[in-house]
View 1 (cartoon, one colour):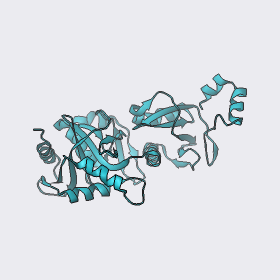
View 2: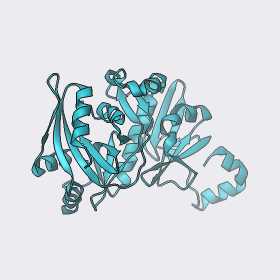
View 3: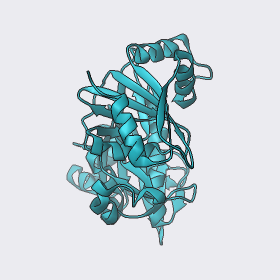
View 4: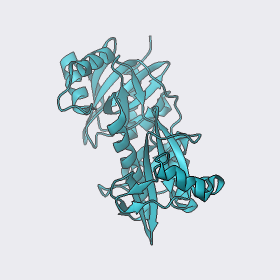
Length: 306
């Protein structure tokens, strides 16, 4: 609860509500959290409350997640953001605080939000990028370093709307929905995306836990559950021409399994059925590329709508 809400309620009434269990104060393993202001985020239907110790913390961290903001409501989970000298601390409710430098705080907050989603979602989560063109969706699968975010952002110049560059939810009926976290661009891609140059140059620089410098960009596509029209497994090379070859159903199934997380120790028959439903009617291939402009041409041809 924010200090403004506490003042409006009255100290005595608030204390009575806490005593009877009607309200539970936000706390970490270090004790009750100091809360001045709060925000509510919508993560594909999951409501997450962010509680900030001061207004400056909200101003520092919220711009990257502002597009996820919704009117205040009861949260399904909570994250607290605290300050200690020059450090910023972020923790899920009742858990340990992780203290980082200010330029490391936004990546850490994204990690905490992802953990919340892992714990609450009933859908399969795919490590993939999702785009849309002419009412059909394209999924990009690939290992770390395959260039999903860079290629997905560049495809905006080919008429695609970028819905997510990182996490996609897969429903049990086979539809997909993008988790609209801000687009994460690593340092090597900053000069490659001319159509977003001004936005990239104006974005803050952040340090991820893997020691990579990144900048975050906003998303422009519409969310919601959608059918998949195309699936591409990315195979980035140091040199060579760009090309796409069709993948067999077993090959694309293997790629989706490698990108999937369902909260289960073993994939259930329902998960396999969801993947089968997702792939039904979709075209799937492997994109081998080294040159980004040429890759755009190949992907556009692959996804031509008849």
